[in-house]
Figure 1 (tube, rainbow, N blue to C red):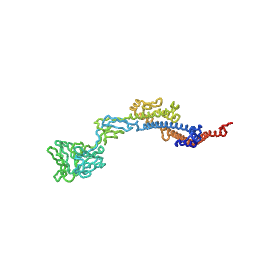
Figure 2 (cartoon, rainbow, N blue to C red; figure 1 turned 45 degrees about the vertical axis):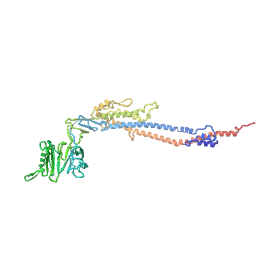
Figure 3 (cartoon, rainbow, N blue to C red; figure 1 turned 135 degrees about the horizontal axis):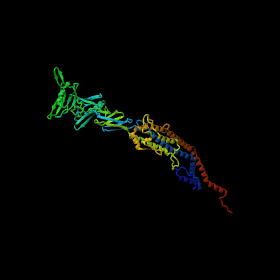
Length: 581
């Protein structure tokens, strides 16, 4: 095989995806030489590896910087958590100022805002606030046509609404009437249609309880029929208000007097505003006529009819639900205020949620106390305070543990932590340890049972971490809660919490805290090393790659050509020819 064919054969059998060819193999195929040559690729790689020695040193520095960043960031996070704990304690609305309220009665519960003065209060609930409610006479259905009338809703606050029923549209039936009432939001009431097995009624309920939210409903008619009064029953104590000819009158019904429909009809017909007097002649029923019909069973029905086309209004403001015969609309419940006596001071409140009776305390009235005062005890919330203090201990231990670990010798690495020589870590260790020496000074003229962390059952161990004696802490929170609060808050938010928070801010401040500065410096160093490596690769290694490849390739070519050159030299010298004599 010719040398050219040998080369072609070699090249055709080599994948085009290969990054390089062996010069030794190519020369061997071209010349037939078999002398071991130089592996150019390996030789160049070895030389470049040696040239990259500085890079490996720089990369090791970057690894150290990365480890320092991780460790510092963990300390920064732990210190920030500790600062957050102190900020929460150094406020008049924080967990140390949280309050609980216990009640001796199930009829009264309460909550207290943070900072509320602790103490015991006496609460007597004489009556609950009620929401005004009225309901209409029974109709066959929600869509049945209503008889002609004029319904007026009058609110204590002033707004009123008059709706004419018995016509198409706004008040043709109970459903339409409810919609019309609800569209007038100034009334502060809500109308709904209630349907049961007997028919449908319109219920109107005030949106809020109390006297000021109460309202009344009256109807105007040309003819009105009261519900049947069963035989043997009486109207009972009640009152009926009529407006006849625009002049109002009230007729009171009581047991034994106007207690049935006959007596009531007579009273209506002879009411001062329903009679006319001409000279000495008095004519009853001048405007409306009240008549009674009695069936065979003795049941009575009262009907009032206008003597002209003019309408009359009639209203029964009953305060006893379902007590009487309901004239058009019956008052189910009158809007009333809650009557509460707190620490001997009486008060009326529009809601059963009472604020202002005790500063900072919200009362929830669930029932009357029947004259027996409920004792409400406002005290510090020991649970919230304990949780906050224990969280501080946990976060302190995390921070001091991260610091201490940097000064511990590791047999695995043969050295201390990556930040053992960092002055910031030393400074943080000293700051955390010095904070534990705080001694509270009570305000002038006062004494305190809590001057140090030891008084709270908090003590430092040999490893620098804190432990909590739960019994001591709970005793302080139960019996001397204000002293505990003053220890952390000081006389004017200048106590233990303020001092530690200030100390932590020198490390955690986003603007110029020690961690911020240190991490920024490390980041800058790492960035500079990256640039140094990139520049070294571009300006030196890339050029060396070219030079070394060319150099080793030339050496390989020369080495492979050496056998041919030796053979030619021997031939010229005659060393390769045999002579005979």
